[in-house]
Length: 110
Length: 113
Picture (cartoon, rainbow over the protein chains, first blue to last red):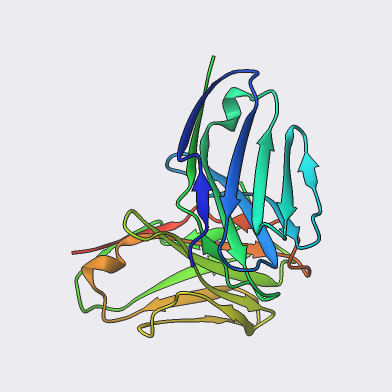
């Protein structure tokens, strides 16, 4: 079943923070985050495995709450380059059978 | 440049035809993933290969098949094409670990007329 992402779209000014959520009705083993700019291939951001592990690099981090079957992606002090559509993909087992959400369109304005 | 190459970049064909999409992973990467992206279906995981063997299968139609060759390049074969198969097809590659960074190729845009 497809995970639900929220919000569907968000507009920020440079320097503001944002949170994108990804929720599933199924028990999750892993959550994968990607960013895609218009006309380009997706860019892999990170994978989170069950256990509530938080990951991050630069000013983008994510958490995974396996009890709530939810992951959140945190973008801190957003930059213009953060604009794009963010997708989460979820897997219920240790294999890679991912199901993707519909995406969250993030726009960062100067 | 991710180091992953896909050919062709664009493909226009007719319904009922068969096409082959090719992906060359980054040097040293053992795993190849195929994805389909369309306006209707969004982003979908199709299939994963690791060192020549199928590792995971997603929403891949029976009309589609894939393989990974000894030199680790992969091909996605699409047959009996339908209008709804028009989409972007991406491949990505990673190293040994499933949690390694995935590197995406530029994609093949397939148009079925």
